[in-house]
Length: 160
Image (cartoon, rainbow, N blue to C red):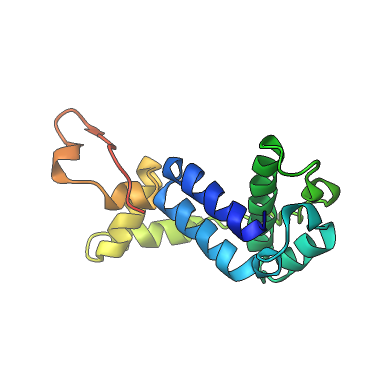
């Protein structure tokens, strides 16, 4: 069985449990980065082929996702006795690059609070600062979620 054929089965069976974004990203990774594997028989896939796929990604984050997806697909093939071992196990995953967290300075927070009187964007940022909401949670709020009298905000959903 080729990687392409196995991917179709894997995707059809597993994707219903994934989020829309996850499903779309996996499909993109498959179409863009897994091309060297498409015509290979599962048993003929070597670590060098996987490395070629991983290296086709530009960002370190995307390289990690390509590595993870191929590993996941081949693990499922291993579970289903289509291969004897997963060649991805012989490779180290690309290193995760930790981004330095950038925080607002005290002067920037002061400026945001001052601007929130007139600037809707500054108002949104100040709400995020004081509530700890994520951007998607804030954008998904409706007036029914805001309870001024009881002093709470009900977070029911998020926007993707």
